[in-house]
Length: 171
Image (cartoon, rainbow, N blue to C red; front, side):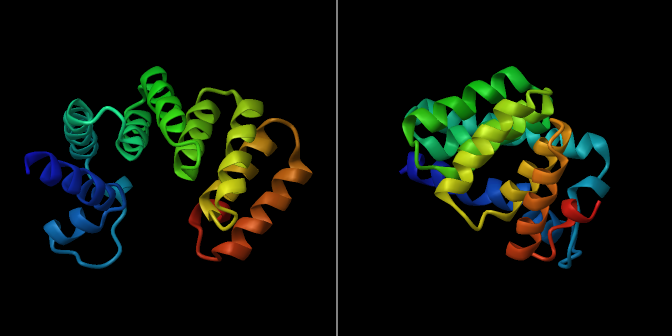
């Protein structure tokens, strides 16, 4: 029963925290709220809390690809790239069909300047989820940073087709 509660929390509440819905409701703003506008110390503590919960979840079930993927995401946002990469790789080993895990692996690699490798992982995510707008956007960033501006622009255009409201494409 504890395992079920913990996994439910990790799979639902962490996603809400990561996407600001829970946090915005707690703060009483109920509208759109960006994690970036929160005080740095609060953002760091939320990510730390998420990491603790996800590690506990993985103690209960080390083969939960979703938990490994979310751990990779949280570690990446804390700048713990080596651990984030290992967690994302573990998620892809457990469930090779989990598009967001390939996306997170690409994001870690792009953050550390490995654009060519990042491109390969973003493409893998997109092969699994062709309408994954954030993956198209990040693919555009990685291609552009890797010197392939024309391909990057094409990826940005596809991201906008999938989701015209995707903010990173506009920046």
